[in-house]
Length: 248
Image (cartoon, rainbow, N blue to C red; front, top):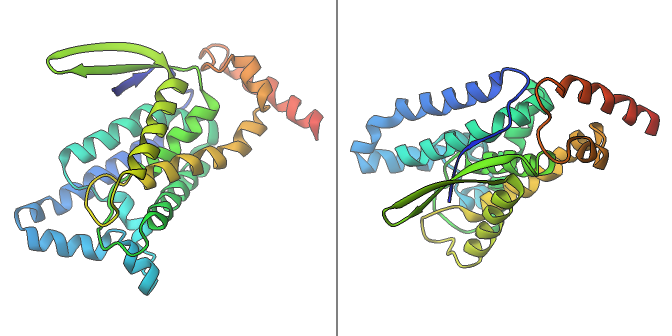
């Protein structure tokens, strides 16, 4: 099950999302030659990735930030950027450019901390933007639970695209991270499931102020949990503002 697009047009150009994608791609291209030298690549990741044991034992917190812009391969990068492309523009549209950037970085750091809690003594380097993107997905679930998402289903040689509500796709994704995380070994390489789960929860929590500013449950009532139509989006935004003011 792999999302390929959502039916949720944004009302403004997502400059920060575009910049994050460009930055991730640019950084990956810059250290791409290191993949030909395993020792050099391992040394690079040791210095710039997030290593739980280095954080807990030496206080090397910088990796919580720098690791968000590193990837372990082309497919790792492509998958993360696709998810960011699908879900990031709508979150940036609702939050605004700079708040969205702070949100993205904050959820990425929270994801790294969650991974540390899952294995504080692990020396396995953690890289990837997926923790921060999981935060974007957690916020998306809160704001657009009924947005339609196209999913690519792959079963051996059979391929099919189906459209399901975002709530179903995101909830299944989150449950899978928890289940897989419980069965994972922090001392082994692989997917950072706890970073994904932690980022997702952090994203939902940090999106609560935006959700309440838009009217809370009233926002769901106005939009029925679906993206507002571009022609009516402006009226919906204006109608939600006096609702919040009256509550104050």
